[in-house]
Length: 146
Image 1: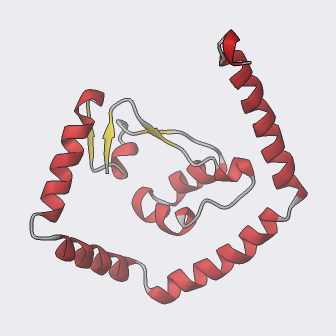
Image 2: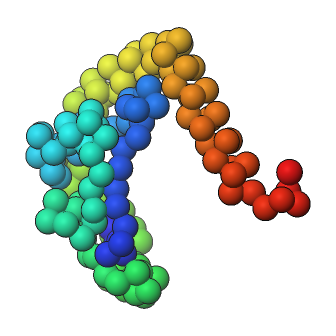
């Protein structure tokens, strides 16, 4: 992943009342258990240019160099063909995340996510964030858009 030095990563899903996809399964492999728990459970923000951010970002560049760096990374990854790039990515995934482990995780994820979606707390969280976002939108809105 290529990121600008002014970029950051965050996982707001827990704050919203849902499970952040496969982050609970995959993130600890990249950043360790403690930092993964802080990112998921404690709303920690991860600056891409930090030592911890570089555990996830392959390359951190000046903001005005992101497009060039992305194009260069794509060219390097696909120089032997897209089929080879996909096959290598799949091989890495199988080596570090056996299919049965992924299936087990998704079974738990699907059940827990369904519980979250039917939770009154989720609806309250979404309504609170929606109201806050809408009130900020009206503040930021020019006078002729009301």
